[in-house]
Image (cartoon, rainbow, N blue to C red; front, side):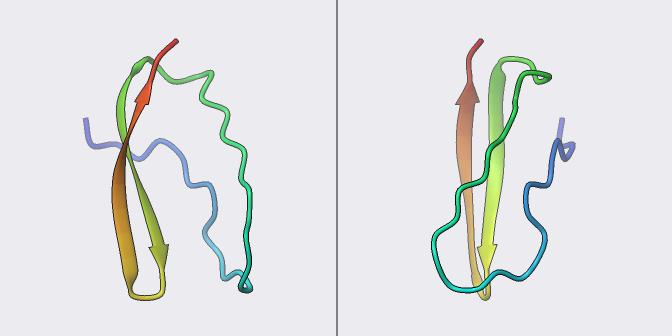
Length: 51
């Protein structure tokens, strides 16, 4: 449907590795797309949610 479901992080972070938990219990099963951005890098991936 093209709606934004959740923004997990929207802030500057120092270099390093990070783990973010995502609770998808309120979402329906289906295909979702997520976007990762870091500087000039942008990556859009597909996620399949099965319940």
